Image (cartoon, rainbow, N blue to C red):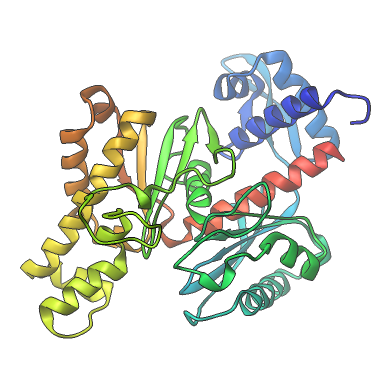
Length: 390
């Protein structure tokens, strides 16, 4: 795109991503694409011509109610990979935007040791990636891009992984550079809550919603924010740190230095510690949820209290951003309405009526795969952007 001013090139690239995002929801006429994206018909037509020439989309003539219209669908598309790294698991998905049976062509997942180093984690990711590629008779050199999600802040300015009690061995690591050196491929790294939001808006519970939030309620609690159909990361890439919302200013000290942060009241380790104190023995989250469903009052109370604490945070979020839907994922959402109903009650109590009435609280449709699928969506976006720029 030599000779085109940077601002114009950036706008065209952004508009192209909007069209491709709309097409991931299914084939559409160019008129429908204009309505889905809010772009002018002329802009959509120009983008479709460019993408058709690049092989990213295919155009056919369809007839509806006696009218002929160009119908656009994703073409063969580039091959890309998404990697979700957590302190307990690692998941790899390989896929393409043009897959007729869905985006994912291969998937692998393993449990991880909690004290795994960054280097060992990257080695495990590459091993799973190679295994997934082999299963579809593909190789690394066929990948156009790779995206990685981490449960930690990722500074977009420096590429450094920020402070994290979940993955302490990764703090200060430039994960993007480290993986790019190993794979010799384009790599992008983001916070896992951002990728959960991207996964759900692409293939899950917030498809078609222009303003949404994804809450990952797990060991830590984070939020991915979508504003006007675009993922919002903030200046340094650390927007959405909802786990450090102050819920109780006299509460326990948090690693961030504040008191009564949401993570210190509703994070999974805190809940399990409370249950161990009450029952005199360690308990897993699945066991606590199972006992609560069977009528155990103590387990039910701990889960409901967690829902109420998270509800205070999402009420503040609703007042600030007024999202259409708040999607809840992570380990805690396995508790279902035992967690979500208290969240909804507190949201209605503390958010202003116009924000509370328009913010639907729903469980993640993609479950524990949301972050990995969001990473795949980000990798596909990176690949398509490179194709467009190329």
